[in-house]
Length: 241
Image (cartoon, rainbow, N blue to C red; front, side, top):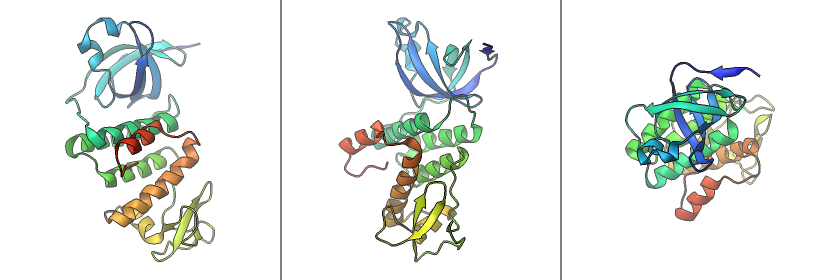
């Protein structure tokens, strides 16, 4: 098996971390150049809090790695600019987005544009707290970047343009189809058009689009519940995920 060795630093975030041994960590990296991959950081827990303090989600990093096979060795890491501080509901949103990326991103499949969209979203969450509109747009962009994009302008069966006064539901591998208002996961054409034109803002439309994207994402993440969503619901009465 070939050895992959990266000679220059790459922008990265950690999506997840856990103890690997008495002194090491197993981290899940999301990098600008290589996409998502797991890596071991050896001996980090024996070097004091400052050594492992950078190895946390939402901290912008520059990393270097090497290794054989699927799990790499993180050979170097350093802070890349200002450390982001997510608190309250924004922190739960951050964990939610990280879990989505863990579930949807294939390993070693670079998505540079998605990396930068993620970076921008974290900046919003850290700077001004929860921005539900930005979160919905990120979900939509993520689906598009991963090849799961939905044509929000036309009904898939007849090819008719989406009409504000009608109702639609998403069908996997087909797209949007017309339905009655009482159908499961029915979404108004008005809300779908607002999402497509990126003019979301009215609370009722936001609720519709939250439920719509939740149903779409559900097709791709499977039946296993998202832990971050359950934690969000237990902590807040009206979660954004």
